[in-house]
Image (cartoon, rainbow, N blue to C red; front, side, top):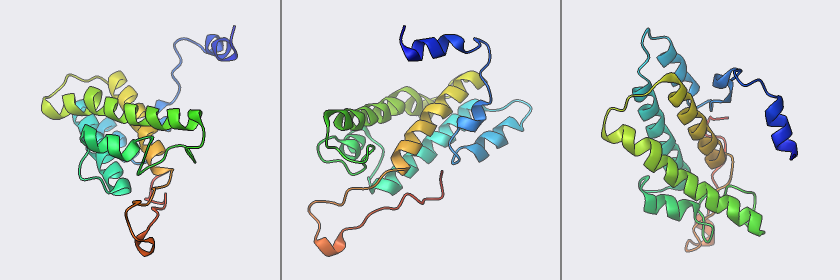
Length: 167
């Protein structure tokens, strides 16, 4: 049995722990506000956090929008604007970069678009799962560096710092 499988079997099946601790700092105030309501509107919470994540990626990358084509351009393993691994030196690094691209596009199709185009029935469990995925994507997008535009002049090259006020 693999080490990870053994570890997973040791965890109590019904203990999820404090999931809110795994939610990205950017989304926690919105979550806290939603949980103060007698009947939280989890659909609105997810939609608001989707807009926030898309805005974060646009700010970090300079992308015009969060369409699939722009996500593909920003996270491309060939000429990324945002690198998720520290470098793209190995096949593993390039796989991680490609995976980040696919996860971002998947988030958009699976979570953002359905909540943007209609009111979706959403419960607390689904909302926590969605927020955890968005937290992973936000942390991956903000904790790394932006690659300067290869067409720019040397004097215009800039690097985005990871200090956008998020952790």
